[in-house]
View 1 (cartoon, one colour):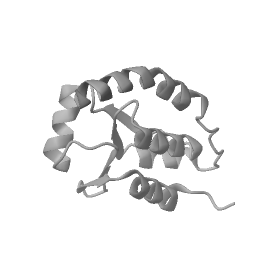
View 2 (cartoon, rainbow, N blue to C red):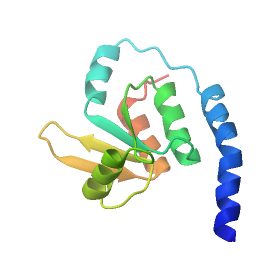
View 3 (tube, rainbow, N blue to C red):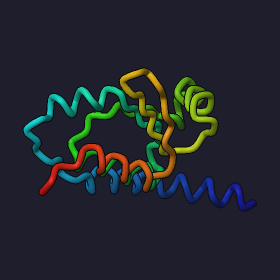
Length: 126
């Protein structure tokens, strides 16, 4: 019974979550070194669920920082979901896959940790 309640609630809230995600997306910053930033972002991938509020927070911060990070839907795409579970060890979103220059891969979970990482790596001094 509880399961049915939460499924119904999720179905009801989904359109509102998608609308909020779209309307609340901040305008991106303008940076002089955008091509270099774009190149660095090629080493990042965000595994996300479309209506997850924590994923939306991360996507908003990526938009604010003008980061073209590849976004992979781990909720509806079984290939991305399997890759997240196999590489990161668990199916939890958001998860940022970071590949360094040597090819070493790090899986960063938790929206706060991901936002903090992005801000430290890409934030422009005001």
